[in-house]
Structures are given as C-alpha cells and as structure tokens.
Length: 534
Image (cartoon, rainbow, N blue to C red):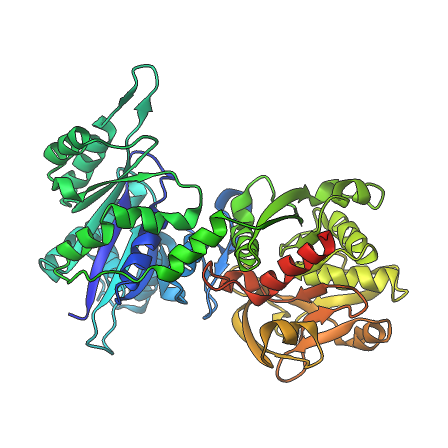
C-alpha cells in the first residue's frame, strides 16, 4: 500500500488551528524525506467556496489546475511547498452532486440511495490514491467542522470504515482539541477534551494522537490524566501553545515529537529531519533589520482572512529583505481624492488586491492615483491591475470616463471588457478563467528583471481583461505592457517605466508565495518600499 493516511479532526470549538496542525505535520514529514500530500474535507453543501462571501468564508484559494478551494489549502501549500489539485478540497456539496448524477444515470440500478453506503463510499473514493508509484506517500486529510456537528458525521463514518478496510498501521487519527484555562480558579480543565474524545469514540473512532491547544503549558499530571481518560498513550498527548510567528508551529510540534508519534502509528521509520532552512527562515523573520509600512486598500478589511495569501506573501517579501512589514489596512470605501494624502501619506508602498463588485471602486482608483502621482511603489493584483489601467486612462491618456464594463456597462471607453469566451456564461461558480496560465515577459521590463526568465506561470481568477482596442493609446501615453499571453492576445502584466516601481498583474502571484521561497514580485515590492522610505 503506497499511501498511508493521517486524519485530522477537531473538537470542543472551531478555530483551533486544525489546518495549521495538519500543515505542520506535513512540513515535519517532508523534512524527513517523505512524500506528502494534503486534503481538506469540508462539511458545507456549497460545491466550492467560489460563490461564497469572503467576509464569511475568507479568501478563495485557486490551485494550478483551476479549482476554487478553501483558504486552508493555502496554508498547506505554504507549509509543505507542494502544489495541490482540485482533488485536495472536497465538500459535502461535491459528494452529493456526484452521487445524485450517478443515480440519475442509473448507476445504482434503481436502488435506494442512502448516506450509507453511497455517500460514505463516495467520500472514501476521494481519499488520495497514488497507484503510479511504490514509494511511500503520506496523505494528510483534515476534516472541517467540529466533532459532534451533524454535518461532519458522514465524513467521520467514512473514516471509520476506511480505517477498518486499510488495516492496522496504515491510518492515524489526530484529534485537535482545547484545554481551557479558568482564570478564577487558575486551572486548566480537561473535561471538554474528554467529552470530545468520547464523541469520537461513540462514532467508532479512537484517536491515536491528541494535540491540545492551550494558553498554558500542560504538566505531566495533566497529560497523564488526559491519557487515562482518553485511551491515548501519554507520549501522544501533545501541547500546542500560541507562537509569535505562524511558521514556528512545525518547530514547536517537532519539540513535542508530533512526527515521531505519527510515524509510530503508521509503522514508518522516523529519521532526523532537515529543518535547517526552515529554522533560518524563522530566525530571519524574528530578527528583522528594517521595518516598512505598506497600505492594503480593499473592501473586506474587517476580515483579514479575505486577503490572507496577500498578507502572507507581503510578510514573505519582508523576510527576503530582512524587513518587518507593517500593513496599514485601508477601507477603500473611505478613500477620496481629497483625503488620499491624509490616509496614505505615511506609507512606503501601496497594494490593491483582487475582488469583485462595484463597492469601494472609486476609493481604490483614488489610492492608485495617489501612488502613481507621488512615486509610491505600487502593486496591483487582478482587479488592482485593471483599476490601475482605468486610473491611467482617465488621468494620463485623456479618457475621463474610462472604466471597466464589469463596473459600468455604459462607459464610452471600456478599457477593461469581458473575455470573449465568457460571453453567455450565466453561472457564477467555477466559470471564470481559473488556474495556472503562462505569460511571456518583455526582456526590457522590471518584471523580467524580477523573475529572471522570459516565460512564467501564474494562477488566475477573472472573467474580464484589458480591451486590446486601447493598447495603443495606453502605450503611447507611457504605459508598458510588460507581460502577454503566449499568443499575444491577453495583457497579463503592465508597468509604468517613468515611475520608480509600478507593476500590475492580471494574475494572483500571492497564491504561489512560500515563506522559504518568497515570490519575486512581493520581494521586489518590499525592496522598492524600503528604497522609497529611505
């Protein structure tokens, strides 16, 4: 059996960091030479998060093969430094959709379709398989939600069945739970963890490892108590305390011997890990030489998770420059040409991320104008690039009513218009230009200088593009179309050569940035912000 399985569940409360625990284990196993992949099974009925409000759900993470997925996949990729696929995010909606299509097609021979066996069998069929290699691969599978939720029960039942079928030594269950601290009595309480484990046991699943989130260290007596009541070896009762830097968690969990415990459960050798690069990255992160403030101008700033990959990529760019990046969150609805100086006068860089809808658009344009006119380093992502073109067309190219058709269908100068292959598309979910696409960079561009190669590949999520009818007027007025699709049809990147550092990209480069491999655009952006500051 070339694949071994680690299932990660959560108990007591949501938001305990199951995804980070799972991703940390992935990093620790990879550091030991194992091939690792990761999956997230989510209990919501949406087919994918592509149509969900970012304020409710956080950002939509896009994979190379064009899947719109949960933001946890971003954590997975950043920790294990592997590109995941559409199979890495499975929702209840996807499972039921598939089963219902099979029923309509007659695959079940007219029989009654039930949760058991049809739904659970479909869930099991989506657990990672790799029949192409005899090399041991470890699949780490996180189950969203909290044990005890009605929605999660089919996933847990599928795991119970799968454990039995896979046999001993091929699966491992890690349960992430909470040990609350009662300030009044000065005590850590284990009862919620005991109750959560009992819920799991009632479903026929015995956890092999407990990862206990706590604000205070767990002493020997507390671990022994949890071990006795939960039927888990004391050496497998691990604490997970808060850390200063998110990417420290693998190092903290290495001290707790998480990977060793998992390898014991999976009957695998546990060699010493090579964490040299990771430790060096954390050291650089915690001991910056410089500090810089950049503005992030968006409309979802009340929930920072809506821009989590952008935030992380900025921090990665900071690490590359030995710099602590402070983000000034600016609500685009509050920005006007009159107050832009007041809001942005103290920043050394400005970033406008992607997004949809017309709320806050005028504020983003005003912010871009301020950055362009005051030589502040600017990075525009997706909609951010499109709006930088709108701003340039209005205030430099002499097209005062220029706009995007998405935001003003009646504009006389549609510098941004609908992609031809998007005409007639009515469904909003999963129909955008999604996934990784190539881009050819001009050799005399700053982008080429940063990437160091002519052809690059970045991930996309959009249905509007630069209107090619306006290419000439943009370039005649000083804008450089620095990156095009290989057939020359789609404008992928723009620059303003007369500006110290002004780049827009139709892509979402933040999705490919890693803490140990910062994305060149973000590293370059932070470098430019430092120069501007000094």
